[in-house]
Length: 127
Image 1 (cartoon, rainbow, N blue to C red):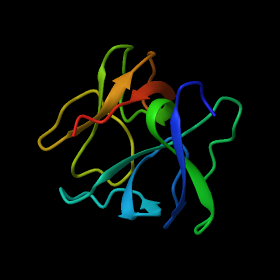
Image 2 (image 1 turned 60 degrees about the vertical axis):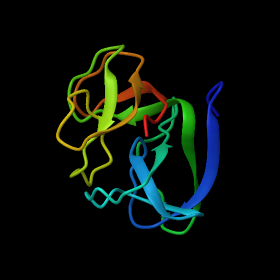
Image 3 (image 1 turned 30 degrees about the vertical axis):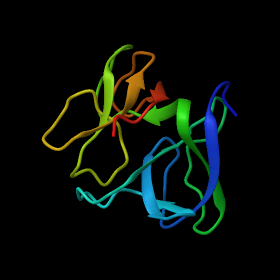
Image 4 (image 1 turned 45 degrees about the vertical axis):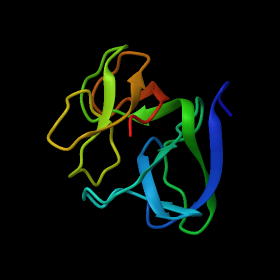
C-alpha cells in the first residue's frame, strides 16, 4: 500500500492492466471504461514500485486506489503538476494531461513521464 492512499479491494471483469483507470461494473466489481459518458469512475488499479506490469485474472480481487497516490499509465508525455484526465471515449484506462471533449478529471500528476510510463499521480476525482 502506498502511504496515504485509500485503497479498496474489488473484483473485476475482463483484462485490466496495472496502472489503468477503472470504472464501476457494479458496487463490488470494476472494469476498463467502455468509452461512454455513462462510465462511473472508481479509481486506479495501482502500479506499485517493484511490481510487474502484467494484468490480473478475471474474478480475483485487485487493489483500487480511490483516493491518494497511485502509479498510473500515461497516455501521453506529462509533467508534474499537470491535471490527469480520462477521456470519455477512452477504453484503455490511460491518463492524459490534455483535456478532450467530455474528459473527466481523475487527479493530478506528481512527476514527469513519457507516453506509456507509469507515473505517480494523486487520485482525486473532480466529479
